[in-house]
Length: 159
Image (cartoon, rainbow, N blue to C red; front, side, top):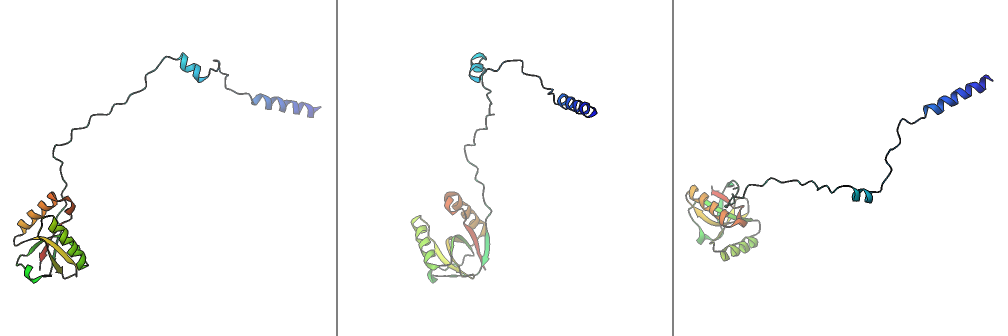
């Protein structure tokens, strides 16, 4: 009998402890389509974006610093030789044919380029040469501004 009472007490405790503390829903379920019809129309939230400042009329070009290299050079055509020391380089090639092709492109754009060979073996295509560094830098910046595709133009100083 003790066993029976013991199992009965255990059974009551087990069933009693499994009660849910949640309360049942007091409102009946209604489908979403009926809820939308019954609910008043709520305007959607509208987010505003702050107005941006008007763009400047002249775009500000970020200028790259001028690359300067000092090399010993020789002229590929002796008649083109000059005593100037500052050369504006628009192209550099390891193959002479490529340098000549680029020279033809520059001629068609109105430049008068010459080809020099550097001590490193590269053929440099130069569009202007100057005896004064300030004048060379000014022309280099002018080329970069007027011809954006030559934005990587640099300055060669003859040793």
